Image 1 (spheres, helix red, strand yellow):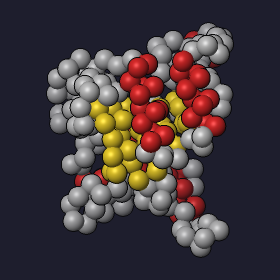
Image 2 (cartoon, one colour):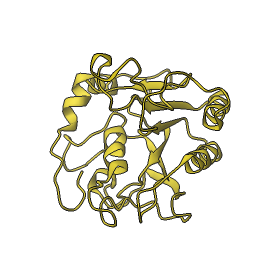
Image 3 (tube, helix red, strand yellow):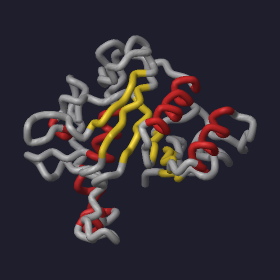
Image 4 (cartoon, helix red, strand yellow):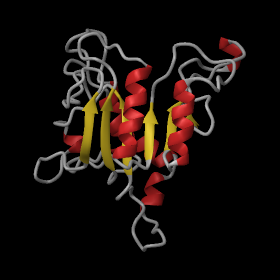
Length: 219
């Protein structure tokens, strides 16, 4: 994954091997189908996706696994991830996240994500011009994901500072609760604050602190 000026050489196969994803791909579910993410509808709330990137193209050169999406940041239907094109210093975060989740480069098996046969719905919440985004875009994306019948949503985003407690009156908290009741699993980044010893008593950000999200952190 790149932003047009820099290469990001992290080998995705390290991650898939570390969590034994490749072992899971060889298992079968109750319908006797291999567990590769096929049939799973994943919504990604981020900066969009580079739908021309080879990690998302099929044998015909089409991004056939990207089933839909919308640019809520700019209020249009083009969810292309422009990275730092308009705002230098920003890289295509959404494209990188999509690659970790569902990348499947047919010419390079190293570039496989955790669920390489899953379907993607891209909800772009950051504006191309200034990288801005707010809760309105997130809420609209959650509503759209229900219409699109997503099974899970990935939110590698959050507020800038760790939260001390849950605010039950937060509209985002309520939206997550309601969508969860309708069957959506929320997978949220824990944040970039590091260990508790280095950054205070509270290190997990909103919405990752909200139940019943699945909070994910790197090691």
